Image 1: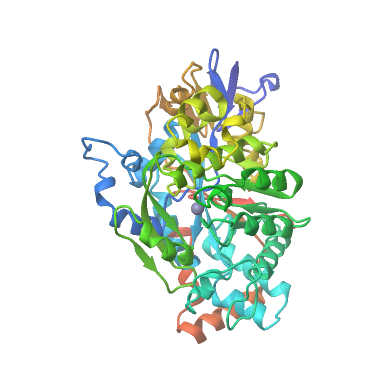
Image 2: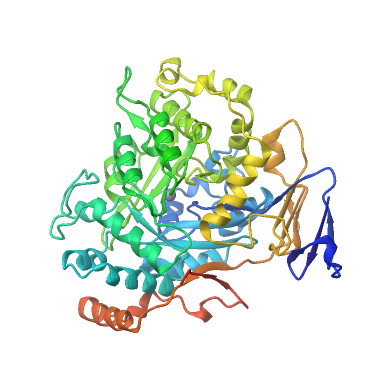
Length: 524
Ligand SMILES: [Zn+2]
């Protein structure tokens, strides 16, 4: 197979146009560059985690025993390098508080090779909740969403434990989909629905990205089911669904409900999900779900944590070690794989570990292998407590992903979900982001070290090693912003903080490099 590149784009062989380069992919597996829709690689929360765990991110000092966490390196440089070596060329940092957008963009700009994007968090902030309380109407929320996207240069909007994090500020320690946020008098359901509609009406390609209430709790599948049903006929994306796949059955009142969730997702055609697969080893949980992280602080391994309340969502950083011998962790491992294997449509189930919450992104190759090989899954399962497996359906699942399904799930589908028409495929007009893998019996090894990777048509990886450093761009949505909302935000920030609303703006010149940004059109 020959792939012809001209001006950083793939051109059809029959056009007759002179190619700058012809890539010979004979004998190799050729895919578009991988796209990761949810990986915490930059921003304030990630930096708090780095500061808390220096022992795991000495990229320049090889520890005698490498932990899964130390393998990711933790620097911007290592993040870009390791993603590229696996053939990934676009990564979305999914949780940036608007006030921290400039910091996140500066850090992403320092991350080599890959293109990147941020999702801005709304839905626990005073401005949106106050719009809802005062009955200001959906148009105001829509206009605010547009203003936030433009100001922070985000590709989409995320809501994290909608209303729950706001309620946490009132000393509330558990919060469900139909509970009411004190003072504001709105439910989680109402916040999710309002933002879902606003994002849709602004024309943002990526639907509202939802981190549901009750993450991690036994019985929380009912919260996820309610959220799935609430999507109705508008698009909605549910993040890291694995963390919501828990029932209360079995000897430890903790069981897999992945089959119920998968059935609901299969039926809800406007809903997409990503998995947030858990793998065993040391990691750190990084989340804007302060309520959840506050509750989980007692489970910190090692015993240190940071809970930061204040601005809107705040953050909770809790280190954690998933253990194969733990009943709970074994069930979590199974739930993730069950979701992958029981959701039929690879266009609607996305590949994530919620890096680093379920596992560092360097675990991806091993997970691809688990999805493609049921014998490998059986080997892993044999290490797990039998009573844990008994409250899951994992041992009965025989499906094996094909390479084509892996390519859909990690390339074509995320490109579509994010509105990036020039990515995720190798057809004419596609951006020349290309990953070539050497097929072999060891699937994990194949995906761990790409044979060659091209970014914008330039060879950046050969035989699993970065050979050329370059820098990508930040993708951001470009909605129409109403002048009235600009004035309103100026007044709000002045009245509330005595600060200009531009304090969170990411200006053109913020990154000292030519073309650091790339606009993604919104539907009008
Ligand atoms: Zn996440």
